[in-house]
View (cartoon, helix red, strand yellow):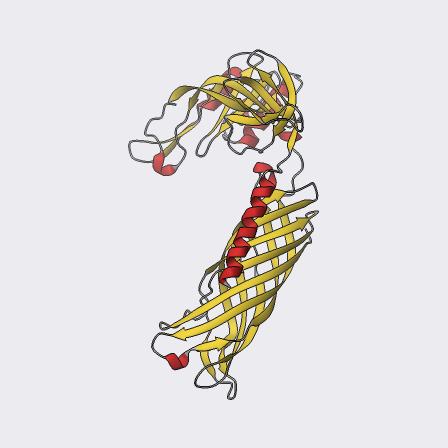
Length: 399
């Protein structure tokens, strides 16, 4: 089983390395520091956090090159993504509760950044995001780009407060008809800020280019029926009694589950969070000094995990995933074959699973999953289980 495990993990690694190189380059452009617009192919990583550089090729089969905030003024991919390089003043105060500043005033620092363009019109909206900070910027026509001020901080009594200076900025600079009433409750998030800028530009009869609305339609949730066949090797030992040692024949079982997959809205749909309640049953004949035994094992698994996709083509992708599995067993135990007396009760402890699979047209999937050692005798101090399982899973997406 150890050899199978090593071969399985090696197979995952080889496919992952091979697939990573197959991320597609998409039609794009960039404007150099000399104001030259250059058509090219850009590796679209669908950045969650604003990049400081990007990789491009001048031809589809050309050499990979790098553009940075120092030598590129602007770059875009298709018609859905656009970044501009600008030197701005930004407050990079942390938004994490244990790292909040005790100063209400924005602590602005001069930085050169790639700002993501959210909306263009008479009033333009930009966004910058990193691991713990999200900031919006704006300007009108070709004026200087400024940050919309928002900051969480702790006051002298260690209470969390908010500096909503962005509302005053919008009241002063982007005031039109009756939009002032919206400012009092306006929240500092992408949806509400974008809608405010849309309303303002419509009020000014300005042509609007909304890059957020040009994003490709994404399938952010999948529901699949998944059937599996399990192959397991199980041995039981007792630290205080050699005669209690049990060796089981190769065990085969089956299961059926429903997987809910939530696709992360960044990085080109390559990351997902999964949950898969699964009913499964397995049985095996075994031997011990005191007489033959039989393992009967039924349970409901509750795996939660992270999945990463590698796209091979429009219709084909492979994936790897890791799961933490909590299990609830019932009608399960080790029984004396002759008397049907229950020798041991089965109660599994949490364990992990590693999977590698293929999905076609986002409908059909096949996966090979390796379970790390599953301790099924959690109620006993001196008993230990050597229990490793390999599962072949066939899935079909119904939603």
